[in-house]
Image 1 (cartoon, helix red, strand yellow):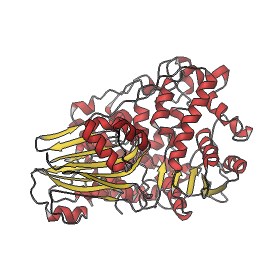
Image 2 (tube, one colour):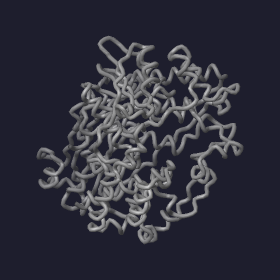
Image 3 (spheres, rainbow, N blue to C red):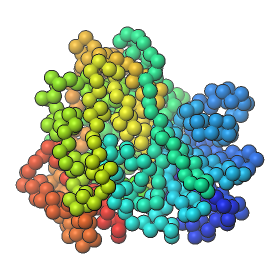
Image 4 (cartoon, helix red, strand yellow):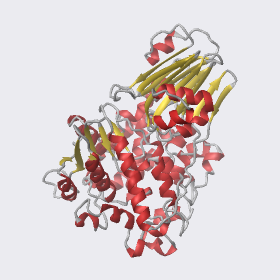
Length: 573
């Protein structure tokens, strides 16, 4: 199972492309110094495009959202997205990115200059990584593939691993480093321009507030207009559409708007996390059905099977650039399988809603702090007492001590978690970078995810909306409640809080412990303890077995530590 995306090889000197590298990348032999292929069997028609002009070659995978506007700015009659992208790059260079809204990745070979440019859109569609061996450059979305090249040694890079398992501010400061030395990953919205003199990687673009003014009603109308357009683009050209629906504000908005935007030949199915049959655990099914019934939609309850273990990483982890921080991968895998069985082509996900429309914490002040978990409050105030606070898993002390000072002394900033009172609706920095880095591919499941709340125009508008509108006239999350009026039952619109996304998560934490305890001796034998604090992990597992610390933070650290250990062991195996 290889990840979808662009695979290619270029010779900056014009020398023949090595047959061994072509074989690893599964590319056909080429007469010239550049060959590339787009691998995405589930891409809709028109999302794989090639263009050529003189000695330039361009391969585009994905979509441009406003090709007509780009053509008008170029003064061109071109309609093909790849031809437009090539024309834009030839005119504006990598500054063309700002004019190329959408979700895409591209490879541009300039034959006369023997220069390779790789780029990804502001919101990632697929990962794009590259590695260089002298004058040869290989690129792919899949870390395992590049690690298989004969000149990439494949050993885990300690500094790259530390960034990969870091908390969001540290992880987003990694400057392209991956867990494999010599392999660089492009961050959302960046470019790499590579020639014989070296590589130049553009900084990730920042999100600046839109020019906006108006009252509360204007904000509600304008944000809904932007969100509606984002949903419309996400479902365009897709017949079978899914939405992850919990009955909360974010997912209910997406479900309602998507239902209203359906065209001829399109259907919408809702997928909801369900408690195991007979468990008696509360879940969101009843709330989801209330929303779905309003729009005549089908609801599929998704209860994850007993396997895989919560503590062991999934197979797709090794294709990506590091361990997945969330220990709930089993639930997302179950959603993915349910979507595949239902024939879904795109699954709408409400991730990011709380950074814009349904924002909860933008206006937090000091008087609110007692209601925030203590660990979170410490981060709000910048009180990270030790390097342990920089990472999701518990790392071995000697390993942390060996890291460069730039990592060990990294300062967790206050601003991602506590925007200024009276400022904009949200702080458009770390949270938004995280949204932009989410990829839309669902490995091995045959469909794509879509995250309408991360639309760049919506994010820019959200950054301009005053924070006082969050609790307008004393109504918590007032913008979302106003937007939901008439779209969902009043019982949904008046909800104060939701239920856990995974009803049986606490049960799994206990039930899956044997798989962790069985894996620990194997991990020790592979030397994983040089990186991960396996003594702490073993002690935490024993404490979990007898009902120790059950806080969300403790659960997260236990799961993340097990995942990180499993990743290292799997990589070395």
